[in-house]
Image 1 (cartoon, rainbow, N blue to C red):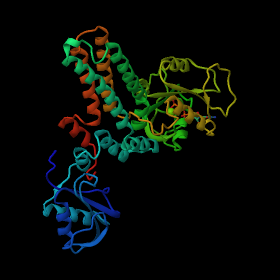
Image 2: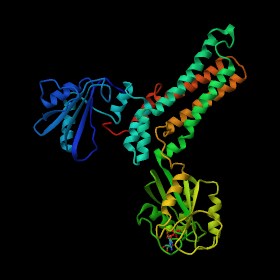
Image 3: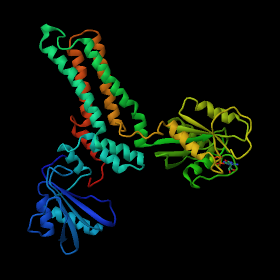
Length: 441
Ligand SMILES: Nc1nc2c(ncn2[C@@H]2O[C@H](COP(=O)(O)OP(=O)(O)OP(=O)(O)O)[C@@H](O)[C@H]2O)c(=O)[nH]1
Ligand SMILES: [Mg+2]
């Protein structure tokens, strides 16, 4: 997968027809292949759009980006043509005939990484940016592409290396004991590093919600208006609503962009004891969903006194992240001491407040601007590992053991940090990261 000596080609624009389409060629032969395709004898002007003819069937615009000043760091030729799959495919085929190879998914970005144009965090951010469905996701990916996280990790790494270097120096001169750094001083530096890692990790659950979206389950007793609320939040008539308790019998899931977050909203069957086998299965699915959801919306019917089923749902969700909705606010309220957001799924009253409450419960109301965000599980896991290693080093330093012990732990921590930015990687990891890219990126 990682051959970089050859020249690669792919259609860079989405499949299907469009106003224009772009074929991208990268590698040492890119200029020659572009010249062959367009039958030009004069050299292409770098970074100038040049009008040309491709074969007999299209007019194209060719732009040459000589390496290293290109996306991949190699010489890149971009050929813009009319956005027809037939035309674009024939350009790709002609490039292959002229010596190029079809690119694998993400191979252009992989080359950018291997040529040190970007680090691994930024490469992953490229994929996130392309996959983003909400503005908040795009913003978080863009910040990472700009290097805010790279910079934060780099600073942590630098301080860590400082401690490592001092401990190593002490090791080289054993007779002097802890000559280059006192254990107490090393511990103080490490505590500072741990605090900064913790800051980053504290953002990570929020960041992951932004990147991956949250599962939000709407639960409650039968007939309280769960499906009506589901429809109101989605602005559709997706779920069936009737006055008969037990209407919803299966899970209904829809993706929604609510308060800038990408949510997966799940309508569930009303929780109650029932003899109906289909409904029983629905209730059991509702219970499963409730357990794995990032947030539950517990719906109560405000116009009725609390029922045993309501109490049961409130008890089972007591330890979960939840928002309680007192629905049917358009009807006279029955006396109840349960607090919650008053909503009428019927009239739409209170739905805006509910959306705010959902965003607040997911701790995501404030878009964090320009601060480094951990949105990626891989990064969070490696930071966790680095933190655990530094913790061990701190304990070792407290025991005043030989420097070898804390040093080994600190080196492990440094390796974990280097894996985040991609200074240390394995082929497996690279393969895993780049296979989720689209072809042509
Ligand atoms: N007045 C009023 N009626 C509502 C409101 N929300 C729902 N209803 C009515 O309550 C009944 C039940 O609504 P659904 O949305 O089907 O309730 P559900 O909780 O999904 O019910 P199950 O799927 O059977 O568990 C229907 O007759 C709705 O029209 C509301 O805000 N105000
Ligand atoms: Mg329902």
